[in-house]
Length: 226
Image 1 (cartoon, rainbow, N blue to C red):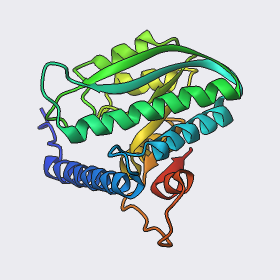
Image 2 (cartoon, rainbow, N blue to C red):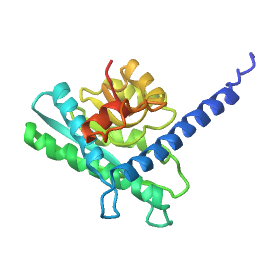
Image 3 (spheres, rainbow, N blue to C red):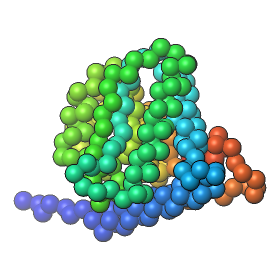
């Protein structure tokens, strides 16, 4: 019997650390954005994130046409464990993105929002937490024809069964979030049909003038298509 080959776990670990570092840097950039856009009221300006949700809706319309069925996945803090202020802010701005996405779709066409799955993120998680086999169960619960829009990261390692389910669906998969190095292989492999993900490193602003929310989104995020 031939010995079972061993995976290069050290290389995978280094890659995960690189992506984790990129996400932390992105979080720092978001906090800097809050400081840049803040007004006399000591609350973050969410207009840039609403613009991101609007951009996601515009690209969804371009992909789907002016009607269709959509299921949305996003995150909530774990109610059983205290979340950090940074996590609460992060999940809060994603909620703004989702709301702007839905409002833009309502203006642009006739869409049915079938369901909104709320994933619980544990307080110590730095990325989307998918309990064992939950992603496969989600795919099986969403009608085959519906477009799945994930305002979060997919599982770090898709199983062959999950990939097969994704590729057999007639509905599309759209990812709003994550970082380009992490998400682009899913788009290139036609597992996802569209993604709007953060560029790493974040491109520098070309001038010292305050950016419009739309300009910030276009600088910080990339629209990925097969």
